[in-house]
Image (tube, rainbow, N blue to C red; front, side):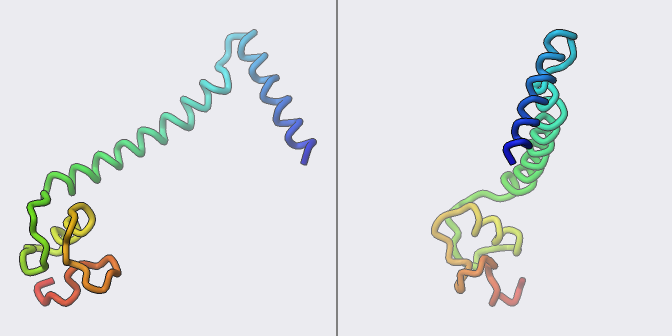
Length: 102
């Protein structure tokens, strides 16, 4: 196991030496451009899609009970984002299970 880590460390410093002396990209630049930036972009895109689809569609306005909800997606929004709701009687994460409308 020590040999493996020693090889990794030597490879890292060799790449850094080569990059600095011969004008190539460094390990940090390579990791940033090839791994971190694409993952960050993908996460930000997914997060913005999630926020735009749910966050602005409904708002917490004090409703607490299933009888006050108009749809199951609205009940899901309320149970995830609004305090003091009485939508999930058995605490399994599924709101309004006994409501026949949904």
